[in-house]
Image (cartoon, rainbow, N blue to C red; front, top):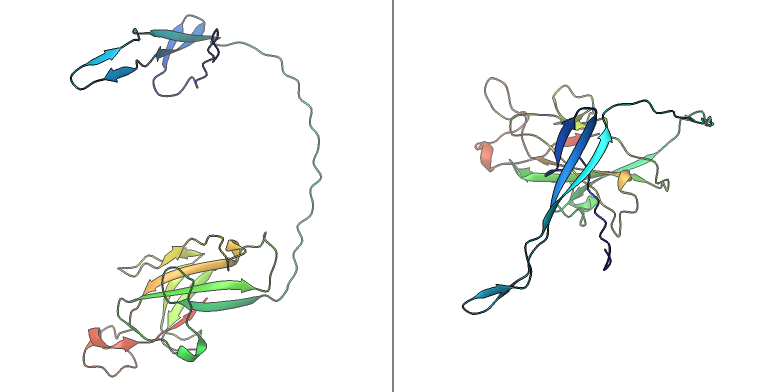
Amino acid sequence: MTSDLAVLHFPVNQCGSKKLTLKDRIVYQVEVVAKREILISSNFSITLDSNFRFWLSCSYKASGDVAMQSFVNPMTFLEPISEKGIVQLQLNFARDRSYTSWFNTAEFPLTRFLQEPLLFEVRLVHHEDPNVELLLDSCWVTSDPNPAYEVWWPLLENSCPVLGENYLPLLHEVHMAQKVKFPSHHKRLEMKMFAFVNHTSGIPLNQQVSSLLNKAYSVFILC
């Protein structure tokens, strides 16, 4: 806007615009209203501005043929490269949801009461490629260190949390930080602690307890 000219720009499909069809033309209209400056005193108000409003219209042909010319530059596509290699992963357990403080190996095995949060992170180590993303296809919990143990509970399937009754694990977003150079190299999860129980009796498997709610439990997490 200058002292002699004001240029208005608005999308024709935005809220507040009106569309009219007039024979072979389509007209879009927007009402422009100038705000008045109100001066307020202790017991009265005044204004130096008059009311100002007008309709801005843009008219287009409803239909028609337009000649177009295009030039296509073929792109050179590179064949995808796939190679087998060895990557190193770490599974760490966080003390809180900030994921800045971690349990050390001397504190294992970790034990938790039922429904206490268990926070852990899987990270790709010794890798400096920012284009690489760590994808956890599946994660599961067992009551035995054997990953193929017959008693297990899924946390992730096809990289997505598995829905369950009050046992929905959470995937936390990872942002760049002082010790997170490549967020795509990290995956952070949260689950509530639970116990494996017998289908019929409800007694925890491999546990000798008198009260299920007051006992600390240990499980094994694998991804």
